[in-house]
Length: 357
Image 1 (cartoon, one colour):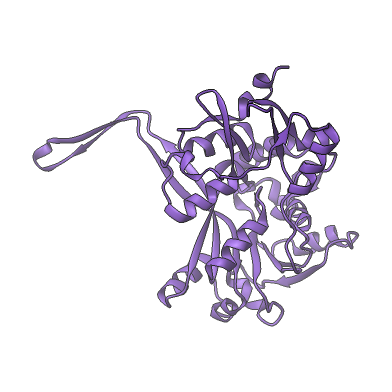
Image 2 (cartoon, rainbow, N blue to C red):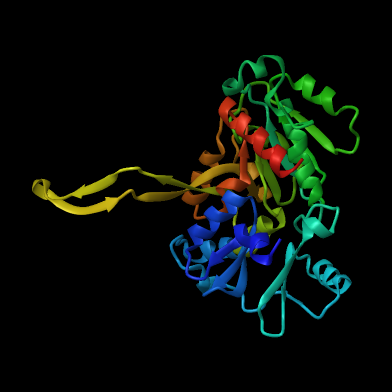
C-alpha cells in the first residue's frame, strides 16, 4: 500500500474550514488530520487545535490554516523504526509523519499499529469526584427498562454506566457518586462483586431532575467535580475539559456537541412587501447541543434547593443571573454517544462495536 492510499482518509486541504475538519474527523472516526497544501505535506491539525480555536473565536467557517501549530512532532526518514517509536512514546503521538530531507511525506506511523495499548488522553491529577445521575426511569428505552434500569442497559459486554466509569478510570479517576432511584437495588447488586470501583450511593426518594439530587452530596464533595448523565458517553480527553474549566475560572462548564443541520432546499429571506431579500441554496446551520457532561465547582452545591425537582439548566441560569461564569466546551458530534432512546441506543451499540471493541 502506497503512502497516499494509507492516509487518504486523513488528508485535508490547507484552505478547508474548521467545520470541514470536524466533519471529516467524524466521518472517519479520528481526532487528527494531515494537512496538505498544493499536494505537499504542510502540518497536522487535531481535535484539540479545533476546540481551542472555537473557544477563542466561535467561528466554524474560519480556514483551518489560521490555527495550525508552527511546531509539530515529526520523524525523519533516516531514523530507525525503534527511534521513531521512542519519539511517539515521548510525545504521546497518535500518529507520526515521516519526512525525507526534502520535507516530502514518505510514511506515517500510527499508534494503533505500533502499540497494543489504546491511545488515550492525559491522566487527571487528583482523584476528582464524578457524579453520575442514574435515577431516571428510562421511559424512552422501554420495554428494555421495564426489566432493568437505564444505567445497566448493555452496550457490548458491559452495562453502559460501567463503560462511563471505565472512561474516567482511564483518566486516573475512581471516585464515583451515583444518584439512584428507579430499580436502585439492581444497580447496587451489579457493582457489589466489582470492588475495583469506588462508589457511594445517594437515594432519591422521588425524581429530582438532572441536578436536584446534588443537594444530597453537599457534605461529601468539597472539590471541583464532574457530573455525567448515565446515558451518554463522550469520547474526549477529559483532562482538556478540566484544563479549560480551570484556566477560564468557570463556575460550571458544559460539554456541547457540535451538530450541523442541512436544509435540502433553497431558502428565501423576505423583506417588507414580500420582496426577496436573499436566496440561499441548501444552507447549513451549526449548533452547540448540550451533551450531558459537566464540571462544577463545589460551592454550587449550596445553590441546589433541598428535596425539589431541579434541572442543571436551572442552575446555569442561576449562575448567570448572579454574574458567574458558565463555559461551553465543544466536542465533535461523533464524540458524543447517547443511549437515551431506542434509535440512539442501536446507533451507539454499532458505533461502540466499531470504535472500541
